Every structure is written in C-alpha cells, then in structure tokens.
Length: 341
Figure 1 (cartoon, rainbow, N blue to C red):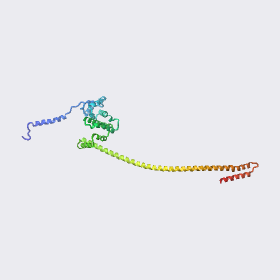
Figure 2: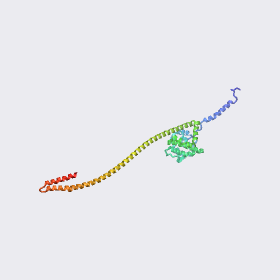
Figure 3: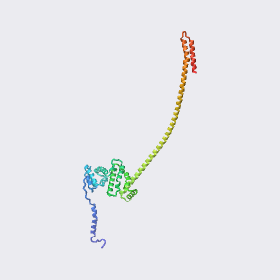
Figure 4: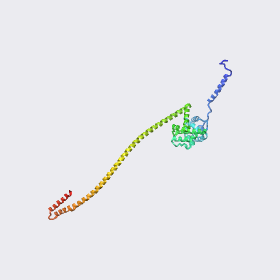
C-alpha cells in the first residue's frame, strides 16, 4: 500500500471528525435567543438578561423620548431588589452615548441612589467636588477593602457611579480622582507600584493606554504644580522686595518723625521762653506806663495848668495884659521842651 492509498473508513472518519470540530463553532456563531424587553425602565431592571445595548436598541426602535413618572417610581423600587449592587445602573451610566430618555433620567437616579447608599456622606448641595469625593471615599473605604465579594462589588459600583456623577455635575478633575484613590485601592505604595508595572509590562493594550494616560496626567500635574510654585515664588519675592522697601520707608519716616518731634520740643521751649520774656516786658511796660502817666499828670496838672490859667486870666481882664499872657505861654512851652528831654 502506497502513501497515497487510504485505509478503509479513514475519509469518513476524517469527515466525522471535521463535522464534530465544526459543531461548536457553528453553535457559537448561531444567534442567541433575543430577549423581549419592554421600552421601560421596569423592563430593563426587571429582566436581568437585558444588556444596555439591547435596551437602547428597543428605546430607539420605539422612539421613546421620556420615561413616564410611574415607570421611574417603579424602577426605583425595583432597583432595591433586582439591582442591590448597582451593577445594572452602572452599566447604563458607563455607556458612551445613551439615548435621550436614559440621559435625562440617569443623573437624577444616580443622585438618588448615592443618597440612599451613602447618606450624609454624599451632599449634592456641596459644590466642592473634591470635598464630596473625599467624603464618599471615607464612607466606602470599608466596603472597598472587604473580603465579602458582594460588599466589595457594591462599594466599587457605588464608587464608580459617584465618580461619574461628580465628573458630570461637579466637574471633578481626573487628577483629583487619581490623587485620592491609591490609599483606598492599595495598602501601600509598593503594591500600587507592582500593579502599575504589571499593567505596563504584561497588561492588555487598553491597560497600557490607561497607564500612559495617567502618567501623562501625573506629568501634567507636576508641571502645573511646578509652574504654580514658580509663580508663587515670584510673587513671594516681589512681596518681599516691596516689604523691604516699605520697611525702609517706615524707618525713614520714623527718623523724620523723631526729628520733627525734637524740633517741636525745641520750638515749644523757645515759645515758652518768649512767652516768659513777653510777660516780663508787659510787666515792665506796665510799670513804665504808670510812671509816665503820673509824670504827665504832674506836668499837666501842676506845671502847665497854672501857667495856661494865668495866661487866660491875663487876656480876659479889662484892660487885658497880653504881655503877661505871652510870658505865661512861653513859660508853658519851656516846660514842654523840658519834658521832651
């Protein structure tokens, strides 16, 4: 028998083997049974086999614009029993382009679920995204580190819902998430480093891209921090120079003030001396004035008065005696001349 000759049954066996090998592939390529989903929230949360993509397809097919209030209320009740770990709610939020009714409903539903699961740790009225995120992490810390699968999965889904809501509604920054998560997800820096190295070295291309993106974010954060530090250093130097100038001006003004105070003290002393001199002069002038008045009184009353009276009498008598009057007037003039000397 040559190599080209075949043993009886070999071809049939090969054919059977080929059919058996093709069987599973054909089964895998066969379309699965489609799940009937009503175009409602109750339909999605009530049917655990319904995927977000199938649900979205049904909504678009039925041209649903908004979910009815009764449907929304019933869905909230249904989520407590059908979606206790929030995985189906998160599946809706994680989709890139949800239909209009889902996008209109999902954010309010997520906020209500966060309020229900986190209580006071989640304050939607607070506009500080970083502060809200820190509070959420503190509340979920125990669950994220739990050894119970259900508790850990629920905490992880609630965390992802919270991050998604905060990014959308409070503009939470990527670097804020990256900065706060390592202490929660990793027990120490060494563990985090190993995880990052494993993702870069042996991870999928998606993990590698995420690692590269986070490295870029970290690098950008460092650059921003360095720029901010340089800007603050420049501001600090400028303020220091201005402060030095201000201190020099203050010192100069202090010296000028001391000099002014000294000058004022000296002037006050000079004014006091002048006032004393003026008071003494006034006293002296008053004494001299008194003496002058006394002398004038004597001059006018005792010396000039009688002479002038005699002159008047000499002119008034009949016959008048002008020679006598003239002598008395000349005598009065002589007295006046003596007083001038």
